[in-house]
Image (cartoon, rainbow, N blue to C red; front, side, top):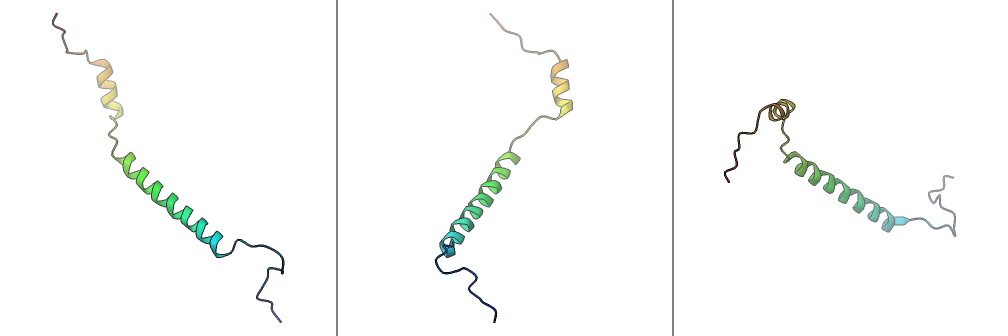
Length: 65
């Protein structure tokens, strides 16, 4: 006969509470990564050509004293 209870008597298993805690942590991690991707996508970085142009062009600002 196949035994459905594979955990011997006296052994401790995480059970439903352990599963729920791990599942909640996984859901929290998913939501944090999703939020971080959204925030990082808002950052506007200048392209490589814009940075090269900014380095080679003289600054046109003149200070009046």
